[in-house]
Image (cartoon, rainbow, N blue to C red; front, side, top):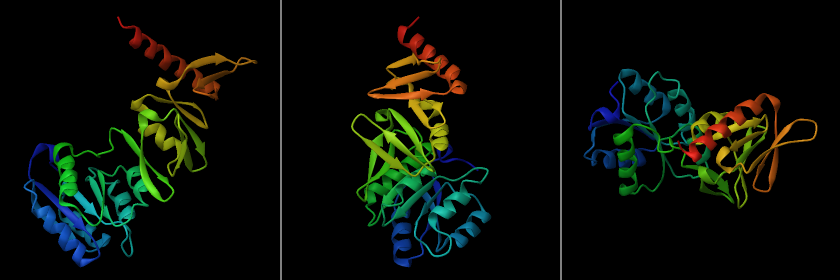
Length: 249
């Protein structure tokens, strides 16, 4: 499969169980000069039949559908040898956290705006990578509204069962993502596991100190977090490397 970055003209698949919504989505996609062909499917099973016939460069996918939902289909696509980027197109904002946990390329709300759809197509056409791949922000639900928190503002993350609580200087946010998943996704952004219950942004560590009894702890803002023995060496190495980079040659 040639990726979107290798050619300008895209073949995309639009999936929606409501015919008027599917027609509108297909119409807007065909109007984009970067899209060469728009395939359509009215449910997840039909979409899988289309994908079985040949690869596509992106899937524009409704979430609430009978049978397999859009999220279910996205989980299936994630197992493909070369998963196509998925852009969710939905009337609901309450699934944004789950969508980005599946590395969605974008999350568009109905009624569709042509300019917003064009932005999603541009992201797919230019990079073929999720819009959130750089993890610049993470969606959180607050009072029934989905907001975006800058990852750079997250000081540390605390495990709470299958959820994780993000701590910033101004408050905390509960997200439906396990700590282990965030550890993997944010490894390249300076986060390090210090304890089974904590993931810390090394850039926000103010102090690494020895506790009575020989254990270690990190001070992050006004919080003091334990460092387990199995994670202490990696943490020290990361802090040493950071200090060397900051001091220069």
